[in-house]
Image 1 (tube, helix red, strand yellow):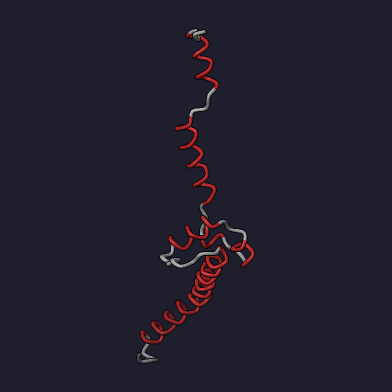
Image 2 (cartoon, rainbow, N blue to C red; image 1 turned 135 degrees about the vertical axis):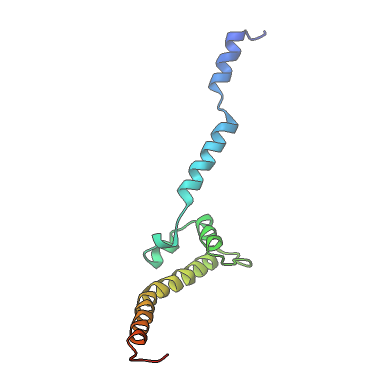
Length: 113
């Protein structure tokens, strides 16, 4: 028995739109998976990240992860990256202060660099 036009319309309305839904879902997933290195407060935060988030962090900071087969290997690389950034931010303030002190001393003629 052939379907009437109204039956066909109802069937189309009840079937999900694969293309549009997938695009919207992909966009939502991408937003949900984004993370910045500054969002990480502790080692436990790194352990809780997904493989996609770990890879994204490494790629965004130009860290090669070729040869990493296990999630734990990615976690270790992100942890190293996070520790390096933490050290830089902690020492960056003292280095900047040290540079300013040298410039000040040089400008008043106390020290010659």
